[in-house]
Image (cartoon, rainbow, N blue to C red; front, top):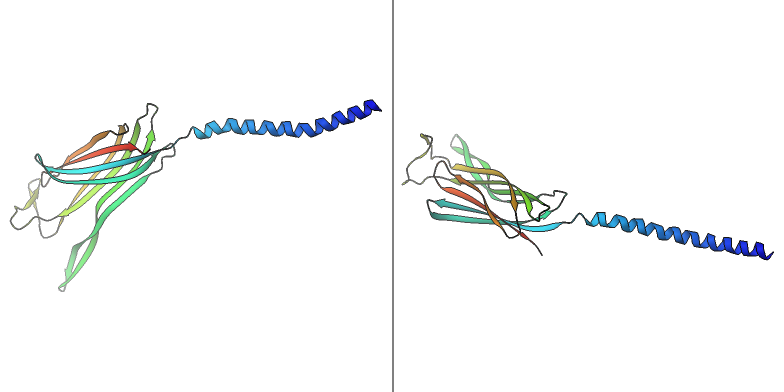
Length: 196
């Protein structure tokens, strides 16, 4: 009977210890999965886009816009919308003026990915529009030799899509464009800074 009692005791010990050993195995596999999850790091960036307008060498204006974007594999987009709804006369029936409203301003959309060498691939869609009307003392506006009526405001539109490879703290001049009517030069500078 002592053999039977010893075997029964051993069986009870194995039965009690086996689930504990199996339970210890599970956390090891869960721990092995954790490094794969943490390898998807997210780096927050502060992105500044500055529009500078020049007439020759003289700077006429500088408009900065700043937004935050996360550099990660998911490719989440960040967006900024800043502008006005401008009334533009559409028609005049029987002396009654009718207006149509146009959105004018700046739209920025961007996302970023971190590259293996520590730089960031910054993908930006930039749209900027403005309204102007030549004054009475200014010469008529012409485009390609064709005079444009000054009775209505003129809407300038600028659009660009940029893919910049940029380092933390670096500023890049991404785009330079010339207004075909005024000859003013628009320069777009982009700066990216890691938020610590």
